[in-house]
Every structure is written in structure tokens, then in C-alpha cells.
Length: 97
Image 1 (cartoon, helix red, strand yellow):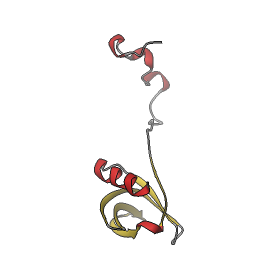
Image 2 (cartoon, rainbow, N blue to C red):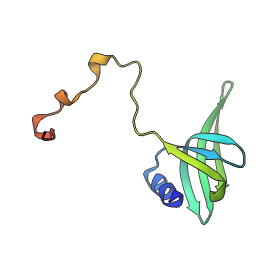
Image 3 (cartoon, rainbow, N blue to C red):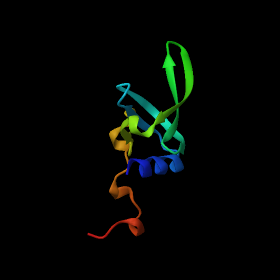
Image 4 (cartoon, helix red, strand yellow):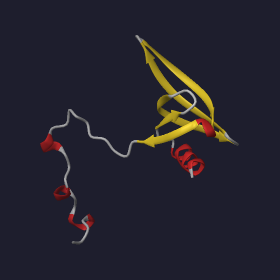
């Protein structure tokens, strides 16, 4: 199941958060660049002081403990009255009750 989800995230180029069991750390907002056998290649950026580093790291499938992805987000600077609601949806696109 994990293998299939990783292939899906690789095809979608969707950012993922990966927990590595053997190192007890998270890799945040990584892109699954490639999957070859049991080796998964992740690309991600990290910030250290004033420098931005780009990394490409290959990890074994069995060392991945969890993978999560963001479904949606709302910008905190957006005012509540600016958020789109179902009332803003065109009549033709609304679901029936």
C-alpha cells in the first residue's frame, strides 16, 4: 500500500512529509523524485540561518515509518469575509439537497 501511495505522490509531484524510523526524524515538504526497487529518492529544501539548501536523499522503503500530505490550506492573512463559501458557487455547479 505504501509503495502505491509513493508512486501516486511521485506522479502528482505533490509535497509530502516523510518520517524516517531508523533516524527518528521528519523530512518536510519533500517531492518523491523517483522510486526504483526499494529505494525512494526524495528532493527537499531546508533553511539554515540565512542559507537555503536543496537536498536529494535516497532512503530505503522499509525505513519509511509514515508519509503524510497536505489536503488543503487557508492563508491566515485572508479575511473571513473574503473566503469563498457554497453560496458563492454558481447555481449550475451546486449539489442537490
